[in-house]
Length: 398
Image (tube, rainbow, N blue to C red; front, top):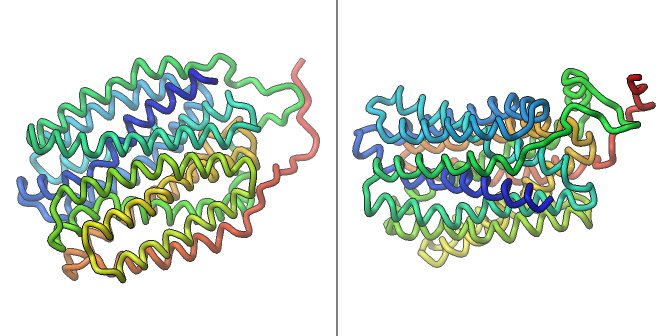
């Protein structure tokens, strides 16, 4: 179990850490290439959509063949995508590299795949806690990598910084060896073995699965809009780029504690109540941030609060899926829920760029984020966490 946690957490640290700093490249790239913010935002939006779509198939492959091979492919795609992001000279090639390649890479190196391994190798009584540890690692990656990426941009230039990160992403390949599994595809005695089609039909007919997907849509909308557009929002309002770097780092730092706390609490209380609290609290935090005068102090306070709530939805959401449906198809089902998250991410990052270009302000998107937070808090309350009843186990083969 320790090897799975260490290797899985380190892979998430690299993958999510690199990804969380992309907002730092918005202005350097658009200014150097003479592109609009919508061009950059659209590429990141495609990245999130590609991540969501690919995550479904990456989850299926990981459930069937193991995470090791999936992560190897993801690491190579990550390196190619970052290099392409640095060298692209047209919006189309930039979108293909930043959007398609990196999106597919993230699908194979982040939560759906890693959580499938954790779910199959960690006892149920420790599963939510273990998922909290992995999510906290991803948050630590943001705290560690965002200032590092800011340093690389300022000292080497934005293109060279991306090429350095491309090389660093290949470190995920040796770490993947620690996630090799040797008993995939064999149901434990007395369990109800399902095909992929049976598992999907069961999940999509179950109202609680639909509600979890709706809540995760909101999570994606909020965090990707803030992560990508807040640096530019702050600069537009006269704050220095260093404030934005520190703000994103604080989100990562406090999310270490938030995700761990959410995972640990998920072992002791109803996960739907944890999720509802997170979404309601986000709506309140954004509202207060917009009301108070903008200053470095208000930004740092907001970033700390949002950091505590940032990815803390991930452990209780995935642990709830495992608790309801079991772990045999956990990566795949987690991939479908995460696809909803990525549709929200697409809308959040793209609307941020589109409405800014149309109105010259991010205000409308902030208001949408508040309303969606209230909606997500409400839809998580009716979720039923009890294991689904499937009747008698299927007979075992002779």
